[in-house]
Length: 175
Ligand code: MG
Image 1 (cartoon, rainbow, N blue to C red):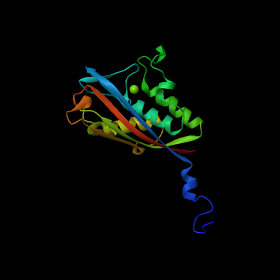
Image 2 (cartoon, rainbow, N blue to C red):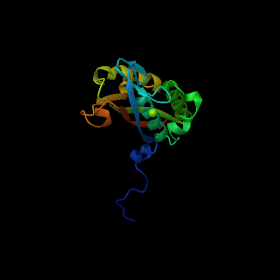
Image 3 (cartoon, rainbow, N blue to C red):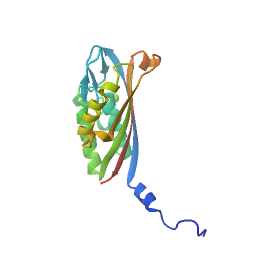
Image 4 (cartoon, rainbow, N blue to C red):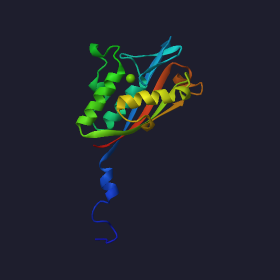
């Protein structure tokens, strides 16, 4: 055996086994008339997101990132859009349930990094408010919830304001 190779995993590698990363991605169509529910708050806007629940694209992507990290399925399996009980439902309830499942499986949320793709409203001015609300929902400090906005540069379904999308990575660790 090559003596230069470690015979057991380094502590860094062992620690790494207690971490998991997850990815969430969601898109919703937009319709005329606000407000826009995003990250658990209602933003002043001339459009709203269309969906079976309250169509909160950011919270949906966060739920999928968390469930993916813990290998607990996905939002569609947990809260099917074919179920009447999920019609118009507050997506904060989806987050509560996902966090409950994560904790029950022996994990805790470390941080989330979020990208919201929307032509308008501008995300920058409301990013701190969204971080604060999402932090409450995830039971972590707001400085572990990063929220960034990207426009569609006027092209594609985002740029034409036909849709809004969110991408989220979440890190969880063994509690
Ligand atoms: Mg959705």
